[in-house]
Image (cartoon, rainbow, N blue to C red; front, side):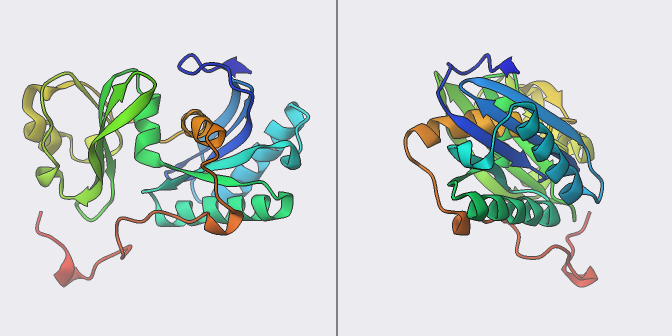
Length: 237
């Protein structure tokens, strides 16, 4: 297992999961050290995720009942992927009596970046993005721009320079977003996606503060009410 360099050792056992993107990831946090698995999953998130969970628990001789909590990427992201995560989390948590913690997927992306100012843009399809911006303040993140659904050209403004851009939105709409933010971007990581190890790092302090919920509260965070639009509802390119 690897020690998380950004977080002090904490006496917490936590399983973290994410299937909000085309990737599937799982991580096991034990007293400040983290072991994780990740892979592109295509349409097989459920089977891949369950296999990862079994591998992690067996590798470290941990039972579900030994965990202090199960954390998960609550969204925004793929509708199907978010439902899969929440379904698996509810099944595991109900069966073991372990509480759950939902973590925002855009915040998890910021946590994974080696930067103090991060703007996250995920391709939401039909010419829109999931957008959020964060600033690191000592051992926590400050929200500069709340998670929102918007057109790339209408992405919320940022203050100052030195921002790290990340997420598939930069792959799908790079020219538009770079025009929107001009010289404010110091770097861009289009291939970054939410990862369970970063969800774990964000969830642990909340578990320590007792900010956990019951299995029945594991639910996706959607920023859009419809998966697809009719032809007449779609915005012009």
